[in-house]
Image (cartoon, rainbow, N blue to C red; front, side, top):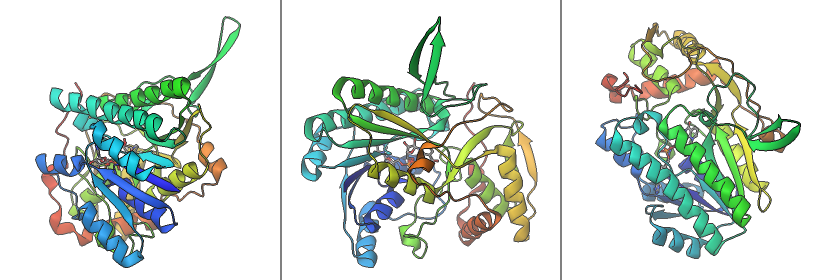
Length: 382
Ligand SMILES: NC(=O)c1ccc[n+]([C@@H]2O[C@H](COP(=O)([O-])OP(=O)(O)OC[C@H]3O[C@@H](n4cnc5c(N)ncnc54)[C@H](O)[C@@H]3O)[C@@H](O)[C@H]2O)c1
């Protein structure tokens, strides 16, 4: 299959490119290096230096003997998007290319406008390019479980059957995002759903939970092929922050009570989910939604697990609660459905102590690059 990966320089984009290329798919990646530039500008570099896309593409070709096409450009520029579509004619597109940080989106007006514009215009350009050049192409867009918020009822997979005054209708599941970034992920979903109804597009929205892990079969033996590992308060995820805090001998900082519960998954499962989705495309006119996660943890569960894994390496990490910079429920009901991808054949990886110890060892190999000043939150929601 010819697969175009938008956001191919990113944490998920590059491992996806290698995964699909290793399995014989023809892969092209597009990126404008927004993520790298934002990390430079905010002085929050990833823990492990990441070669640029051209360097990683060369390394991939030399070691695996397979080609990946690279185009550097902005998806908000329709001329650029049109050229890529005309030249590559993708059968599937994986759309990762958005501003993905909740704190970044809440930083100030400029970051808010950038997040809105970037995430919606890139999606809108993609929709128009598919209609103009490849109307049968399947769009796989990365969404987030964060669009649902934490309602006091079970979260279904994308849709909710409602009975009202004796009549029934199937609606998109109500969205209650908790940051501007998450709001844009609800909006890009609405945009895609709209154009499925208008133009018979084929779309799958993967509402994904936070992803953890660095090593995939393609990068395990070659650090030159790894992906971003951010641990700072803007682009880092909570688990990465705890791992770095444990390695640096700093306390694990839990926001508020730590009862915030989310669905998590291993990077290798993201790659498997995306490939399974591409191999089983949505029908024409179908806006299909899968909830993409494997198991749920509260923030406190994660802190305790990292503390325990640290003990195996002789690290004694203290857990401290700090005021929550976000506005979110710190203890709540959470029961989201997630059977769609299991039905397609996903065989999940679970978060084990051995896996956490391996991640801690990786962090400790790069210990000299840890900047502890990046660990505390700098952006507040209020
Ligand atoms: N990583 C996670 O835990 C997670 C969880 C849920 C959802 N997601 C979603 O998955 C997607 C990828 O996440 P990630 O962690 O790999 O983020 P990332 O920032 O590492 O990757 C996104 C890439 O897209 C590029 N990009 C952004 N705007 C662009 C534009 N206008 N033109 C060209 N390239 C552009 C960035 O430079 C970056 O390399 C995002 O849409 C995110 O919302 C990620």
